Image 1 (tube, rainbow, N blue to C red):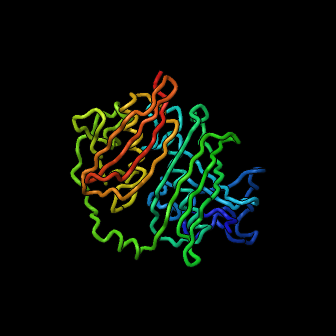
Image 2: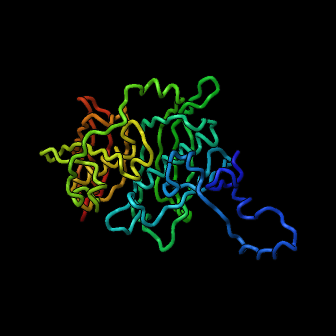
Image 3: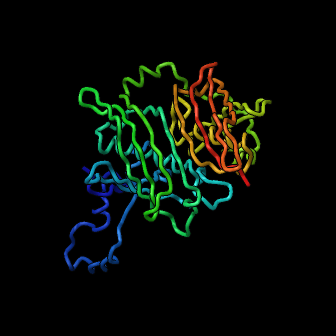
Length: 329
């Protein structure tokens, strides 16, 4: 079980980095003791959360709880380059969704024995937030995640999938809940499954105006206009440094979640605050085949609106999300 915090370098543990190797007293003066109660932390290995860029690793530590489940620690940047809201005063709920996704892959590798290199197929991702508790503080917030697994799947003694639930707290106060369901397969099996997939994306269409979908930069818009108010073409920019942190042969799950958020914002109106998102992934969305995104308001009041977002490729539904937002006053 995990008992230490790993350093970014695979060859140096945090305890070695913090204390150094034993030295003779004549070598150099003994360092001053650290302030009482301080802790030295760093990110978990990026391979455990399937990120190539160290800057995109949100998790810093994990441990098994005595009563079952796991504790995971994260730190949220106060201004992420992509997972950020236009007003820049509250944390982006999709930053929380990405934190939940990373927690699942971390524990699968570090605690469930899934080898690095195995592929994860996410079938469900959900998040529900309390916006009033997500105001960005003057210093980066440390986030405590309580992770509980359900419906763990094994095959021939190997972990092959699970559902898990997460409660996220800042300063002891619950700020969000969420969870995900995934299966994982070996590189060989994945190669057979995806043998005909293309790594080349379709030509990139012009985006809808960023202000219509709650973004500031056109490069962060994942929807292109089709001439219909409730229908868009999915924009797949494989050069995007966050959504395509590393090369993949399909549209990433977080890109589809962002498409759902943007479509719901366009349907309800700019300034809508996301309260919850439940995404279901039915099949891979291919990079080189046009994908159509639709949004339909299913419930609306002054307090909240629910929007059903679907993504269809070659006439088949590949993704569906229910997005609940609070309309702008």
